[in-house]
Image 1 (cartoon, one colour):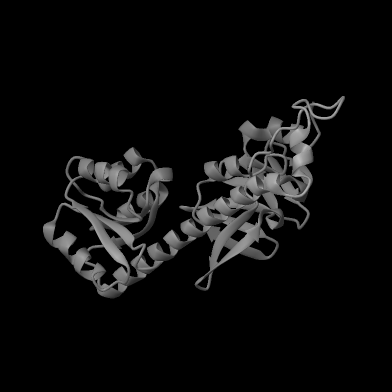
Image 2: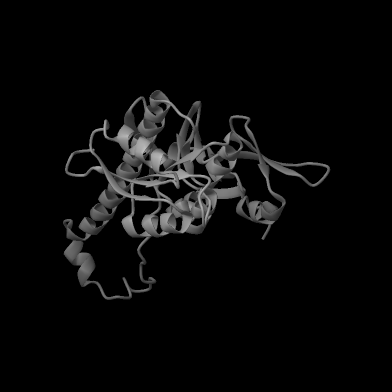
Length: 283
């Protein structure tokens, strides 16, 4: 993050002193810009959608809409990196399910604030890295049309070669995952991933003996991965099909997939027929 592109912060809290405390703590951080401060839930929704902040500090108890209702209204997939601020620790689990990156329990000290903000800063870096990676892939695919021999392809009739159906462009599926490791952003090839499991607000990539956490909803991952290679077998599990060794049918009708390394993954009842079809066990 450079001074030319500061982190844009939104502070949403109905207590003026609470807003000011967060603003004062942010004053000690490099490359930060407070994009706005609001004191109620509906204003928080409007500011998130209008200002597109990188990080939002969101109070759980606010008039109009609570912080949790703000997250539901905006939608977890569209929420910026969110740090919930609450006087009630019992809200923490709900907050993480909705999109929280972290939460601060009032009264919090400077060190706890710095930990939460550092985590949020790293998360925004991962999102930027992923967007840049996807943009690069898009540019490379477009550039293929300028490669040697491309004129020959461009001169072919729209129907392709005689006797062949026209070729259609393959969807741009996710090929690599950006993951953070010891302060660095590394990339894990999708081909190396055995399976993916939901882990609270994160998804855990399992590649052999290595495990990596990324912040990505399972629904988004399912849509962005090549369906010829990956399949969602449970609301919390996506598996790479060529890693499957055995389909286990339990006496009670429960299904499990056993991978080549011995790992067993549960199959949800609603996905059994599709699993059998994809494994060639049903028409």
